[in-house]
Amino acid sequence: MSIQKEKFKADLESLIEKGGQLQNALTKENYSDQWQEALEKAFPDKKERDKFEKSVPSFKSEYQIWYSEAKALVSQLIPHRLDDFIRHYQKPKSRKEIGFENYRIEDALQGLVVTNDWHDKRVGPEAAIPHFDQQLAIIKSIKPKFESSLFEIYQLVQADLFDSELDAARELLKKKFYRAAGALAGVVLESHLGQVCSDKGIKFRKKNLTISDFNDALKQADSIGVPDWRFIQHLGDLRNLCDHKKPDDPTEEQIKDMITGVEKVTKTIN
Image (cartoon, rainbow, N blue to C red; front, side, top):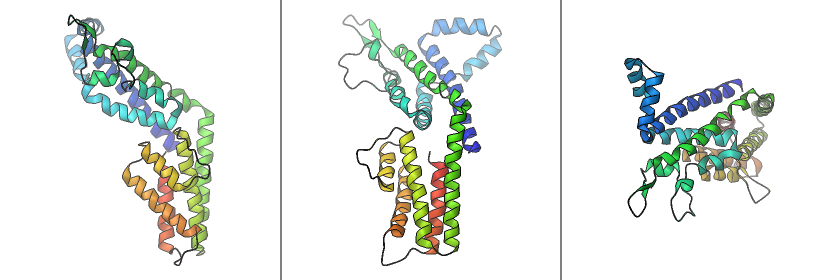
């Protein structure tokens, strides 16, 4: 679990650093005069100034990569803020006119500039700056989470529980209780996927949910891709083979693959 936590922390630090660079890019691209003045004050030496300026990325080129990674992290760690995070990017579907209050980052990426009847500029990409500032603030708000003992304890307990249940499934497999081993691994898979859906704020109307329900919901939410969806679907089929009496019993090799597959899912899909 500590490895998982450290990975999240490293990803977060990288996103915050890249976010700072993108903030610089937006300022440079929209307020060039003020940017140049601030740069000359911060870096009196021209060589240092030129070096720093070269490190500033293109917002249009780099933002989408940052957004995709940041969105994934928000959905995993603070899913209740995901809608807010997306709202600062996406154009409001209900808007009829475009002004400063409803201009979004998506507009800026398209270079949208709105003018009045006299062709004077009303709003342009500079209006995206406060929205990006808010997105970066949401990302930074994750940082204190890693200092919380509750986060550590909860994740440790859940990880240990799943590991111990998979160890029990392996013992059943050794003793050739194939159906029991597969059924237990299936419980772990179902519990894990249910928790992932809960963490991402995915809600369901029906009560008795299955691996297939969780799997389909994660795919629809773009939380997993088609390869992972198919892999989980295959594991779900093996679980059904163990839970329901079929003409053919599950084989030792199938249950081995299932336990290994469930372990992989619990470690990589969060």
